[in-house]
Length: 403
Image 1: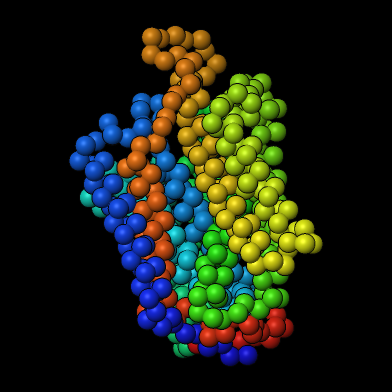
Image 2: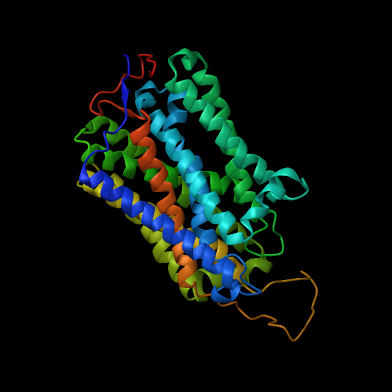
C-alpha cells in the first residue's frame, strides 16, 4: 500500500491565529529569559539550596518527551508494525520539536547562552553533562537523517537502518538524562541506578500522550477523521506505558524504603512534604497514572475520543508534577555534605529548602512549550509530514513505502 503524505494548506484564519498565539508565547518566553539575564537570579525563586527551578521542570519534561514522541516511528521501522508507518514522519517531527523546545529552555535558564559554543567544543567526559551534549546533538542529527530516509523516495531503502539507529540513540539519550540525577549522589533522592531506566519508561507515556494530542488536533482541524482501529491501538499503547511508569515509581520508592538512611527523605516526599507530597499523590499518581488508566481501560470511556484527549492531558499534567517532585522536591530536602558523619554549621543545617517560582520562570518554561508548538505548526505547512488520509492504514502484514 502506497502512502501519500501532504502538508497543511495553512490558509485558514484558525491556522494563522494558532501561529500568532504560539509566536506570542515563544516571544514572551524569550523576553522572560532576557529579563532574568538582565536582573540576575535575584528575581527568580532559586537560592543556594534549590538551583534548578520550574524552567528545568519544563525543559527536562520536554527533552524526555522528545524521546517518547519517536514511539510511533520506532514501531514502524524497528518492530515492523507497518500500520504505524504513515504516522512515522509526524512522530519524528515531534521528537525534533520537543527536543529543540526543551534545550532552548535549558540553555536560557542556565544563563549565558552565548557560552554554548564552549560546551559544544570542550568536553570533560568525566561529567554526565558533557555526555548529554553529545547525546542531544546526536539524537537531533539521527532523527533528521531518519526523516530524510522516510520522506525521500530514493532513500526509503535505508529507513529501517536509520530508524534502528535513532531508536538505540533515544534509549541512550533518555538514560543520559535520567543519569544526570542518578549520578548526583550529593542529593539523597537522586543517586539511584533506577533513574536511567525510569526516565525511559516516563518518556514512553509522555511522548505518546503529546503525539496523540497533536494527531487528534490535526484530525479535527483538517477534517481528516482518524480510523477507530488506529485510535484503539494508540489508546491501549498509552495505557500500557502509563502502567509501566507507575510500576517504576512504585519500585523506586520501595527501594528507597528498604534503606534506613532514606526513610527521612521518603517520609518527606510521601507524607510530610507539603506541596511536594500533594503533587506526588494527587498529581503524579492520581492525575498522571490512576485517572488515565481508568479513562483508557474502562469499557464506557475507552472508545471515547474526548476521554482519550482528557487522559493524554492528565498524563502530561502528571508528568510535570512528577518532574517538579523529582527535581525541586529532591533539592528541598536538606543536603548531606558528608554522608555517614555528624557535622554542624550555622548555615541551614537540616532546614528544608523553600522555593516559589517567579513569573519570569513560569513564562520561560511555558515559552519552551510555545516554541515547540511553533516549530510543529510551521513544519506541517512547509513539508509533507501528514498522511493524506487518517482513516486508512496499511495492514501489519503489508509492507509499504512512504513517499
